[in-house]
Each structure stands twice: as C-alpha cells, then as structure tokens.
Image 1 (cartoon, rainbow, N blue to C red):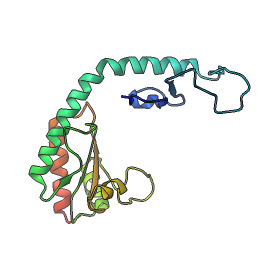
Image 2: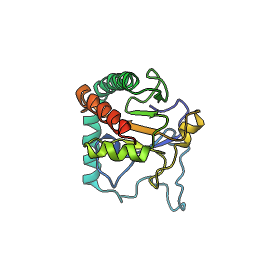
Image 3: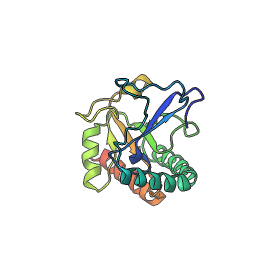
Image 4: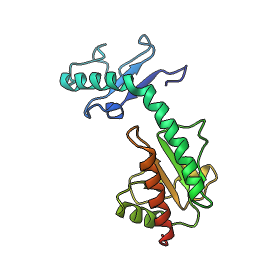
Length: 186
C-alpha cells in the first residue's frame, strides 16, 4: 500500500516471485516527473529493458495479486500462532510489536541471556533456519539498532520470516528446536 501523498515508488519483482534484472517504477503525477539524468529528451523509457523479463514480471505480478489476500490472512494467522507458541514455551521472551499492527511476514523477538550466534548454530544443525542480529546489514552479526531503539536488549535478537507455505506443525518444530538450542547452553 502506498501513502496518500506518494510521488514515486519502485518495486523489485523478486518480492512477488518475479525475475531479477528489472524493476517497476510508479509515478503519481506524470506532469511533474523529470528525468533525473541529463535532459536529452522527454522519453521515460529508452527501450533498454528486456521484454522477456517484463513479461515474466507481469505474469508473476498477476499470479501474486490473485493469491495476495488469501496469503495475507494465512500469514496473519501463522504470526499470531507463532507468538502464542513462543510465549508459552520460552521464559522471558519479548516479542517486538503487536499482532494487530504488524507485517505478518516478519516476527522479531528477544530472548534474554542467550547468545544469538550459538543458538543459530544449534537450530541450523537441526535443519531449521532463522535470523539474528540486525536485519539492516549482511556483515557480522551486530545488534538490531531498531529493536534497541524500541527499548529491547541488544543481545538475544532473533527474526523469523513466515511464508504462506509454512504450517503450524512446522512452526511447532521451529519452537521445539529453538527451546532445545537454548537449553543446550547457547
């Protein structure tokens, strides 16, 4: 969803299952739009895009929009379920945000007195992948400055990305593996 006063927007087709190597640009008011590059002419598209990538993007977007509402409902249910499971199984866990006002694809939480890197290793050894540290960088695991700004500890930060293909049974396994990783002294 775009805010009421948007001017331009860029979409990466990989978000909705499309190809890489192309992007979509939306311009709210075409009368105000100016090419940010050298003003050679007034064209917006210079014919330098791949027609097969554009077609693949259109097909992916069409398929994504057909199932987006259904997926959103399922993700919301999975997010709520996961929150309940985590709180019931892990002592002192603090979940960021509330389930009524969040992007249901993502779940961030803090488990005090744990070392994220060690827990990740234990969990991954059991075939489950989660994330830890800051989501803003791909370098060394560093604390999440967003969670820190929200008043959470800078240690023991974890993130889960939910997908419509996930099941409650799979999420229960994730929580079980996470509990075992914490108990193993991680």
